Length: 320
Image (cartoon, rainbow, N blue to C red):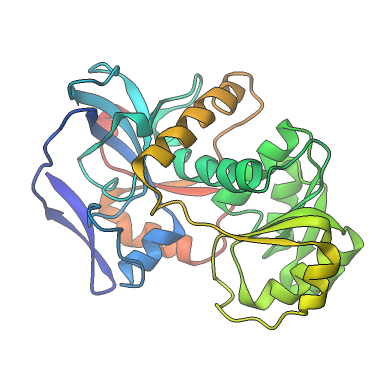
């Protein structure tokens, strides 16, 4: 099979061995794969896959099941999307059948490639780890990203007002159209987020440069969930504020979680989130789809930090 590898900072569509389909697994003929910031880091040699995971890029994909291992309830021909530790940007992928969800009603295969990673990330970090309660206020940094787009919609669906920090006025308008109450453009005045504070939950992919401000913005018993380090790994904090506000700082990653954890997460996602697509309360936010031959352009688009929503690589147009 052909697959996309990160080689010395570039991407290459190369021949790879076709993986075997074992007990409990399914083989998916890939229609499309979503791009994530982790793919940019892996391409640059900064984020190797967990031990035992595929070296092929891609943490999520959509497609059609072409083979079913013993013990799986899926059927050949099922249209699905999958959460992966790697391997999605390939002509086919083999994955634990418990890490697969059906393509939601009314969603295309291309759009479905943009769903598993972002919705799993938001559900895990905001609704499970931070235990968001109805009515609590949320701050989403990088609100126009794929994760931010999913988080805004889920906050709206579950009755949580949310605000965002973004990179431009256009992206702020995009977030407000999705359901955000408001927010700030980071280059204008990030400190003005204090006008909307305090926040019960902050979802933070930035880290270092936002850390001190986050602490000022937290409500009593607030939960600050750190999921990335776009702003650096070091910060100076006033720990007296952590004590006084009883702040919980939660560091979280998804890719390295074990199979059972991911199976439980996907089961929860299928039960509580997937039905909202059929109800029209959630929608894929696909910014742009690139053919796999234009993979470098797709990676450049994501790296530009100007994307509102998700970027997807189309692997097999015949399935779309």
